Length: 141
Image 1: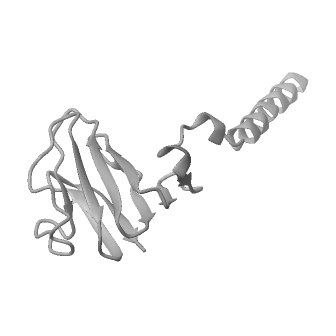
Image 2: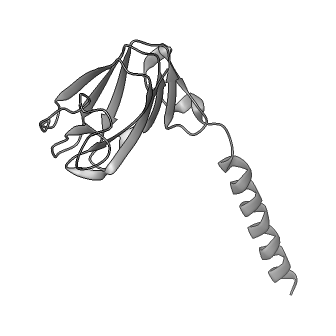
């Protein structure tokens, strides 16, 4: 019985230690998404920036960051880091009517990029036309 209590105590200590270390801040280990001008928010998937050239990466399943807030006349470059094609377009799918100018109108091969300068204020949803589940939004102030 004593051995069982000792084993349970050791397991409890291990679990408590794991939980304590799991919640440590690892932000120093994560690279900045846009260099010094980009600001990572706690959700790690939203950038608020006054930088005039923002980079968004497509990995084949999602965009990162998925949500942006930028100033008017900001360039956003979408880079295809996947092994398949990427076609950036505004919402909604498949019409792309919310911001028709914000449409690459063609697929980008792996390694290629599409750059768009946002000149209209508002909240603009976007997606990969070839994989509409991969989406996000850009708020232009």
